[in-house]
Length: 392
Image (tube, rainbow, N blue to C red; front, side, top):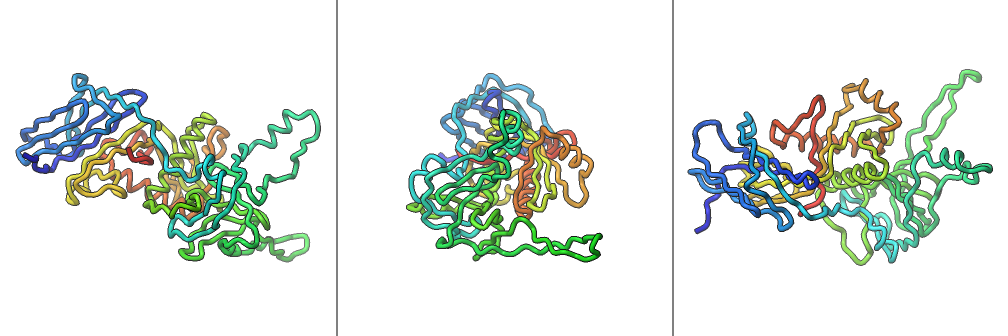
């Protein structure tokens, strides 16, 4: 006989490296309501007089029922308990650019927001990572002769794609269909010696999607264009455009940047700034080994903690790999002193995105934080962001 669906909300966060898990039963009330919690290696079951909620775990995740400890009621959340868990899988990020496969054949660039083709059937023979921002200084320190790369910017050739932290550099030929650059406003700079204004065009020019008018990147030179990873999807030409929810895609790209940079450079604090140079968000990466599992009963329960609301349907259970990040917004004069101290700290890495995407990311952070159990939303003076980036 099928169990009736109950109101109980279940939130489970598993840490792969620590082999531990936090279980939150979000609908539990402090009154004497009968509740039977059954924890098995491959599933969770909560029975109340109203019905039963059951979660079946992914095949790679196993709980240790005998390790349950620390059962307590937390006001606003429900019941909390901790236990041991084993998770053997490795998460797969949503790939914005698969270097090994894309460099073998033709690929197409799409606007992620609307699917407009930006570059069609481009044969990329070389896909190369760009060096760190201080590479020229390092060359000067290690070379015993004049720097051979001095004043020589790294620009891709016709069949190249250079990959930066948050962008691609591509050589656009005149015969390719690509977005028409939109001229940036001209800056007027006052020259006191001659007592007149001299127009100085900005170094970069925005590249706009023809269809949805989203900023995709900037022109770097007459032939080279910078496309931001949060705005572009690159696919082999024989594949169709993949429809990915916008918030899910942005989260995955940012999570991938944070994980890769923290691993390669032992950097865990980041500033998110717009192409205008303004800092919008401060991020502090805590861990990248979390697995988040939630059970949604119905649309009525989505008000509680629907962390994965963009990709989950009602009456479903989903498991996602996630990174846990602390963040502080820096808009409307908030956290100015903290942002200034972070900007002057050489151990903190800056990630540049279109200004509109910075605001979009801030909205995603705020929504995500509000959907966590209340007791998990803050740590010290920072807010918490669980960025889901790969479905299990």
